[in-house]
Length: 318
Ligand SMILES: [Zn+2]
Image 1 (cartoon, protein in one colour):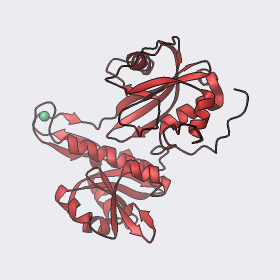
Image 2: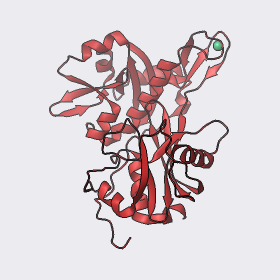
Image 3: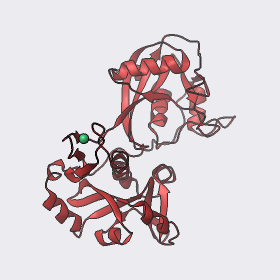
Image 4: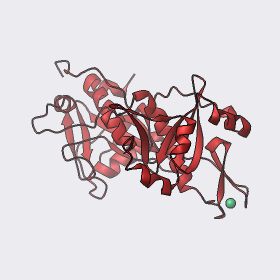
């Protein structure tokens, strides 16, 4: 492409780049964790099911609650130790279902999902990684109350980073599900697809879960072949992003497509086609004549696409 794309300065993706030190050595020390939970610098991120509870402070929204404020919100479910921020303890706290409903009508609070918080820039960006950490780990607790080995109930230990079964002694660790998300490239063009769940104008990278016994490169090639029928050769890792909906790790890659003919698997995606770099530039800049868009900068897909617009097929080398 001849001219340099006229794009604004890059914005950061959401949920990664945490400043919190996880301080995993403290997780086994129940007395230390109890003291940290009452420390006057302790801050709690509070979750009501899938929603985050925010405090209204004038026009701003604040996600951190003091220990006393967190207790006053109602019966707590699980609490997990997220780590230390400049030595100030940070916790994630879930609420019992019965405690959530009364909060929805309180004028001093706002319950909102974490995706909307990121898209709207509703809180300071430095809170997004610990909110993602808290949502992912509390969501795991909510879905793993019983032992997958023997069916008995399990108990939270290690500051929330393990659940133990007292019936069969199995230790259960929180899971993160690897998802490959990739841009298949041939020369000046790449393939974007549409899921039926997307907003009407949005096109994005293809994506899918890596399967047991599969490398990242193999998962990329398989997903591209399954979804759009293209064969890929070289796969180049780009970057990753925690995506706590509910517990994914997005692994971003560029892939070199060897074939040209797209065959869509309608059970996976609604549509897919080739886009050249000039058209992608218009989409990123929100200036496409048909109003087509890419995902917003909070998502790694935006950055995978932008890297190809800026660097072309060089994203496959170096
Ligand atoms: Zn068990």
